[in-house]
Length: 386
Image 1 (cartoon, rainbow, N blue to C red):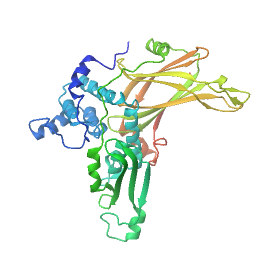
Image 2: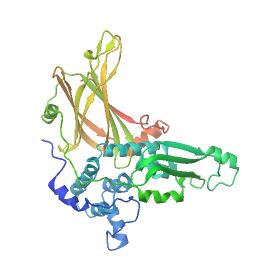
Image 3: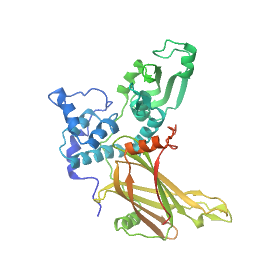
């Protein structure tokens, strides 16, 4: 039987944090976490690699000082795993897509806003100023290129400088905690070969509300209980034929974003070459560790038809993104025809690669950095039709 994601121990562990004050993660704490300043640095160095990566990469922009302090005082991997699950759970209680969207933005920032280090290496896109704003607030509602000013730090030909690196003005219609018509200005800094947030805009980050209301934490309800029962019982069925394809994109050293695309053969989706309306299959997806610990559950409907004529095989499609630490998992997918009651269940192993292996593959294939998170360099893992 899969283990529960939420435990009384984790709830007690994090209860004092429920009233944490919302401030940007990179701001200075309002209270000391350790008696000596170096104690916090030493505590970070003592963390296992993946826990340290999660703290300084995955959560660095959205974790509160109180949460960071509590995390640094945990003693075991089990406590840290429970903390991380509760960290995301409290945020997804208000916005069910919060965690996944956070990593989607990181992946996009890595591909769109990657910078350069002084030594010639590359800086992850989420670490740049434009990447940070994108991760925190998502895509701007509009971007204006400003070419009527000289790029910061450039003393050469003005026209060439501003033509190659025009300043950017990002406009957001509304940001929680700041208000309406918010603008961020980015100027190209020649010495860094990258764009920097204008100093006058730094204070806006301190006004934003990056921490959702977590006082009410409704328990998620399972809609497709019959499919959950099939997955829990590990019963493989093939009355409904479907296949899935998994693609990976590097987010941080601690987390890889997996996209699962599912296709279901659907002979009933067309009639006389025309798409039949209101055809949908229920899908239940569960990802668990080899120990049985459930790390993710998704429910959705596959209702998008591919193949709209009699000469193609009609299929229903669905997809979802899933952030996971690198490692081995068990992926279970169950699909059901709501009309006939027929079901199909697939159980496969999911091998999530590391950020380093994805970057190595990208370099080996000389793949370019793509500007869209939906068109990214990936390594893939496929499963044939059941």
